[in-house]
Image (cartoon, rainbow, N blue to C red; front, side, top):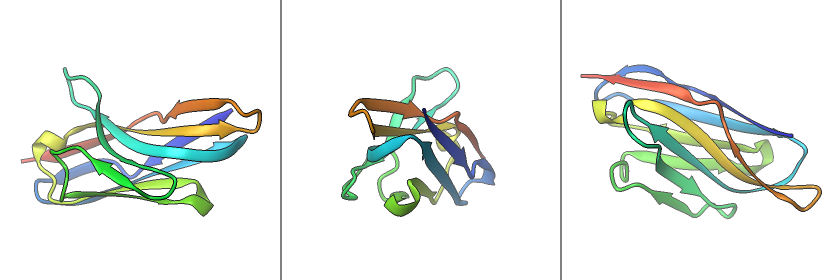
Amino acid sequence: QVQLVESGGGLVQAGGSLRLSCAASGSLFRINDMGWYRQAPGKQREMVASITSNRRANYADSVRGRFTISRDNAKNTVYLEMNSLNPEDTGVYYCNAGVTLYSGSIYNGWGQGTQVTVSS
């Protein structure tokens, strides 16, 4: 089993910053791509940012230049630094990771989600 545990969400005023963290644990051999998704009320889940095992990052147009994704492979942790937040960034943020298990199988895991609320 692989667990992804997020932290760092909360309430912030527009223009503020938050940092999300997601730590993976369990019987995993290697973590491949990691990413952050978000879901606003009444909307579909969308990709916010992703990062490969060699730290190549990709961002949604709506957050590029404001958000930064990073990872610490030694800690099996991915981070999302969010700056210049606006109310449109409000939603539940989910961590995602593609994991290679010791069996050789690939597991696509999700965290439980952490709420980010940006007030105007």
